[in-house]
Length: 309
Image 1 (tube, rainbow, N blue to C red):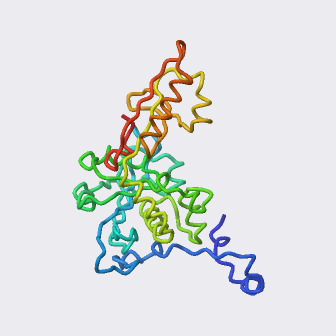
Image 2 (image 1 turned 30 degrees about the vertical axis):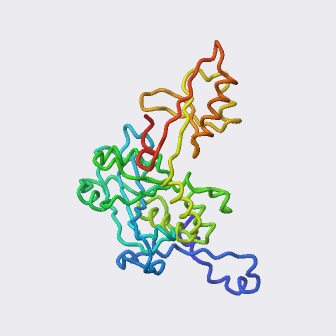
Image 3 (image 1 turned 180 degrees about the vertical axis):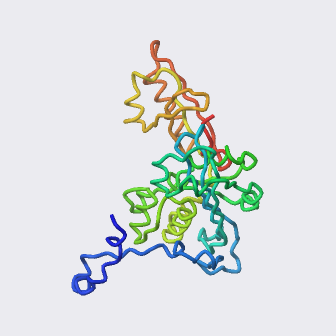
């Protein structure tokens, strides 16, 4: 699609005014308009005298690929915002960090096509570890849209910051219950009437922040889930004979632990429910020829979304 085909159709104003029911207007996310970031901090909601003020950091990475062992971060974007803990609403957009780093390896062509980031753009660039640490001072909650992807890359690159608190807006918000039929960041914003130039770390952070600001229930749900303890059940061993039932009937997903062991896992917000499912699996499928174990592990914001251990 050429740029000219994406411009607003000014020549259709008359048609739009006659039949507005046949059209919907979408606009660029205001925070992503060029030059807006020079005016940070920007107030989103009025601060009240009794507000308990905390910070969150929206974080996104662009990488050379999906392999957390061999691929590297080429762009790190972060946006710090202030929110009211007692009202669970965002109050202001405060500042941002957006830098490249040279991965010392060619950026795959498909990554350049997706992100627009080329070898020339990152050549000789290096993240300033002190600046990143300073940005995350005060132990803010880090929010990523797919933290299971971003956190392992971040922790590997910045091991001294691997004990931060993380939340995942992709999986810790019940988007379907909030009226959305999908959970991709672009789709969610489009449904709310906004668009942006996706697949650049800093812009994706602003898009996620804007979504949390527009859909206030999503931010509340995220904070509530992020503060809680969660549990993951790992089914390890001989599961071949009932793998389809694990996926279809019991909602488990296939994964690989850091030690290379392949297994099935499922997340729970309640330990009792995890124990109940463990009991069902062992009583239903474990016999002399099918030996496996179900390991239930506890996770907090400090340990969630780390690499599988």
